[in-house]
Length: 192
Ligand SMILES: [Ca+2]
Ligand SMILES: [Ca+2]
Image 1 (tube, protein in one colour):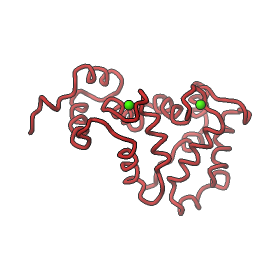
Image 2 (cartoon, helix red, strand yellow; image 1 turned 90 degrees about the vertical axis):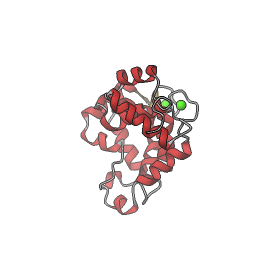
Image 3 (tube, protein in one colour; image 1 turned 180 degrees about the vertical axis):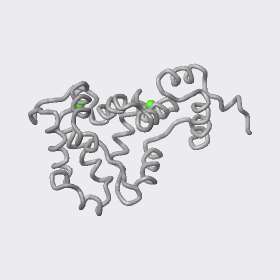
Image 4 (cartoon, protein in one colour; image 1 turned 60 degrees about the vertical axis):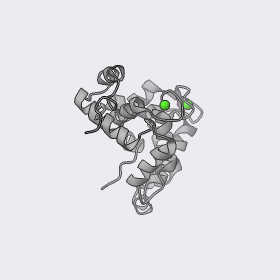
């Protein structure tokens, strides 16, 4: 349907994405068709991205978190997500391998993009995560993670760092992989 040629994804982008994700050429073409339909301009703005999150989290406020996620996927810092950035995002957050996913998580927590995570950055993301958790669920959280501050303290303690020290990517990934609590503390997955 429609003109297949005009909506085909460029060969270079396709080759690059096949290399960097586990999606097949067919899957990528299908994603591209969907992307074009939902996003005729070819770019996702922060506002559109936040709307996607709003749909998934109707009982809470995912806006702050969505802003951070958007920042982590806007690789070229131009304020919008193009098809390539969008597919990399899908790959990282859904089917990606754990280590890739943790590389992404690192970039999510590295708010100022300087290559290190500080405790105040952990605290900032924990506040954003907390706003996504519906009130009823917040009340059921364990006592040592039922406020954003406590969650940040608990997560930071995983890495054996002082409050004024900073965390490199390798230390972050290793810390999360070696600690059972850390993986759920760095994200929020709604219980459906
Ligand atoms: Ca971009
Ligand atoms: Ca940083």
